[in-house]
Image (cartoon, rainbow, N blue to C red; front, side, top):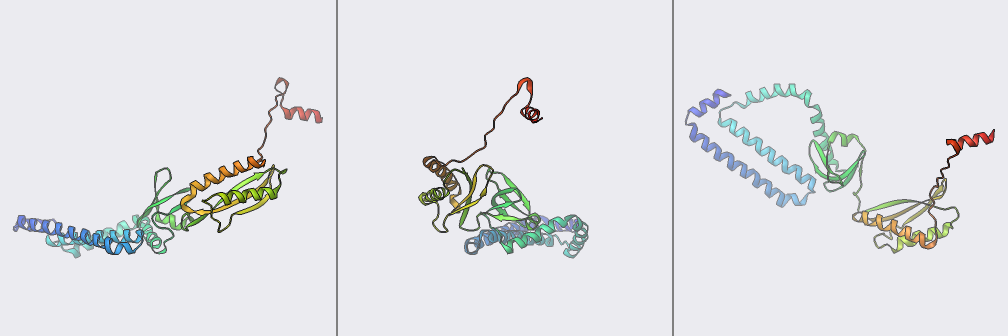
Length: 278
């Protein structure tokens, strides 16, 4: 390969190099033009995820063709080069199984489309907005503005929750009320809170479900539906409205009381109780 390059430079090499540079520059500009036209006319008809992947194939494929053209101009035998690359590829193949697995998993993600760029997802204990989807990994932007890279194999083999896939969501709020309160009145107040909140949807209708008897309260699940873009506003306004309505109607939200008693000479209460029992 080196001897071919030296021979090429010896035979009017300067002129040929200049011609080759012009070809490379024109070729690269052509690749970028094709990529631009694709994004402008065809990319708009696809989702952002597919458009990004195809755009990268255009650029990478074009660059590979340019490299092959340069090697051909230097009289480098591609068959010899490919044969050497084949041997090296066999050696490196064992070390790159993870990368190949990620690429295959990435193709599955692109075809299955469990999420797209801009969706909010949860992977394990991490959640955030999908920032990019590549052949090896996806990148997630967390709510505190950190970037997390997750390998595609992990995404394929892990349970993934797409939080914003559908246009509306349900918010579940768990509440406890005192055993002395009238449950019919509690349900009426909660439904009124939902009805007066302009961000809460009428359909599907809010849910008031008495879930059981707690240690110090009757437990209630209060669920409201809303448009996914209003999550923070709905959460804040609904909780504030529940607290204000309960205070106004005299409905108690019980909480545990703790009384600390210290006996004489540091004797614990439990110890005193045991002494009395004896």
